[in-house]
Image 1 (cartoon, rainbow, N blue to C red):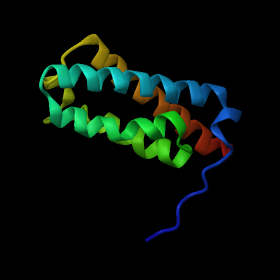
Image 2: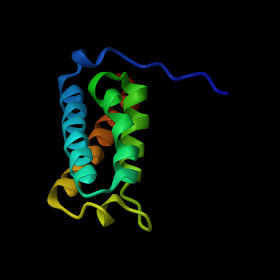
Image 3: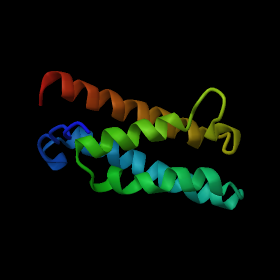
Length: 110
């Protein structure tokens, strides 16, 4: 097993990153509630465990959680099949923004 990559500075020192992560957390929480109300427990159970990483995880945790949430929007098996809404698309876009921010910070070395 390879060693875990350094987490970088605390999130509170990077407000845009922290705000992007918290935006994803809010959208995931709302999505989980909507999915449960629709009887879509499978997708709710897939998304819900990632909320703590978005709310208080370090950069490495954020990267893993953002990739997993983004993976829920796959070509063949997608959360959009269970939750076809503008809110789901907002979650996808927010996860993409967070991944972009994380990548930019990683390539800059900050």
